[in-house]
Length: 252
Length: 324
Image (cartoon, rainbow over all chains, first blue to last red; front, side, top):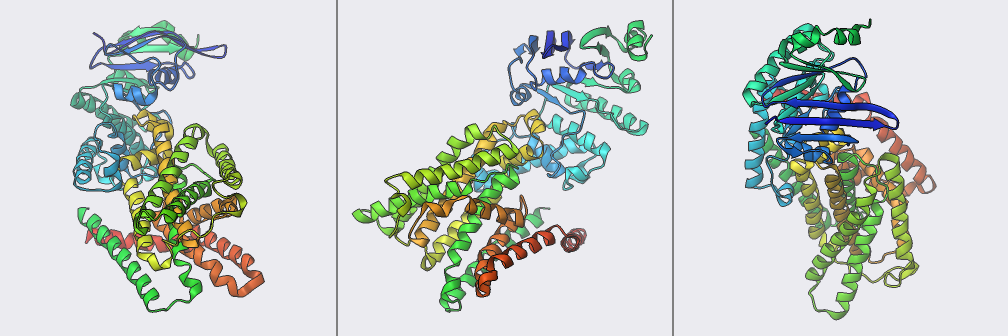
């Protein structure tokens, strides 16, 4: 059975159909790309999948569980994590605390422990720190633990956002333009990191990207979105040579 | 890293002990005149109010202007309990006071919950205005109720928490500061700060926003209520007019001056801003003017390059120590 099955998904804002009859099936372990020209509705699809918007039509099932109608926090608990196109970190918190916050639903202790620290607090916090450091190490951020997130350079902030999403222990990771604003070197490095986390954490990844080199380089399957509807789907080679796609991107 | 945190704990314990010893010496040695002795409990009350408001304003990032409302609920609840228990004399004084503290805090927390649930869906300016209105409503209700004795207020409240019982007050203040400090270093505290920094991202990593907003609101209301009980049992009489929006603003000024999200700052600012009006008493007519000027000067200093420089020096010293 597929990990994520989206059928007939649609949402309209007033009279505008931002996404219409969108279908996607992602198998476990797949690295799936979602591409399309500006304003095609890619981020809207992410917002629908993570419960930021409620779809007007259609179904979303993850591992056989229905996700429609659930809020973002609940969907995160079901195993979907995401990053944002415009970075959303907890700027006034340290890098380590950013990741520890994401462990919120995995390592728990009672309110009493929150107020009056004791041995339980020490043990659980240490556990969280160790888990967070493990994730940070993957991204080479373990040396920045005590730095404020807003003081990190741009490229590192992007990485920290992925690290934070990974810390929630997702089955499906949604990356919204992870390479936006990166130079070619940083993009290449990011491709390696994405491959690495996929193997290390055995997760499924759906990514939105404009950088065709990155998309063609790592995605196994692509869906092209245009004006809120699906234009084409297939392997990168098939899709990127499809005349319809070329027209959508470059015009007649 | 572990060593630094241990050192921090010992440093804090030393500061608390030193503060206690200092207060004891000042009181036992009769080094303070009456005017300053009477300020000790108000300082503690203001610290508790500022630290609890900082939880909502500094850490959760929501501006509220009704903190005096929670204080008054605590004060009246506590005072009514001690007055009624005092008549019957079933409980010894310390037990009666403990009961008053607990009930005052809980009653304020209940109101914090009742108001927090609908109100925290609002944001920013809207929340500020609604909480301002709430504070005024509480004042009016207390003003018109029979049990609170209306505008005449309550009097002859037993003085369980005046300066002669400074140990109890000091203990409660330390407990409040410790509870809030600990909270902010815990799982729940991180969730609260995450909501302040970016609510959409916080939600996306599984944090229920409304749950933690209400939680922060309720906890802050509880400690404001406890501070109110101490206030009532220090002054001995309560009037609804005391808890108007001026009081709420006064607490907010302490928080802003001390720095949003800085507990240490709140404590220092609470001490300065409680003592300052008394220090300026000698200047008579110019008192409020000077108070305002000092406030402006301190705000400017707070955001100045001079302070930044001082802080930088400290950070470098810390870094140097770490590397050594």
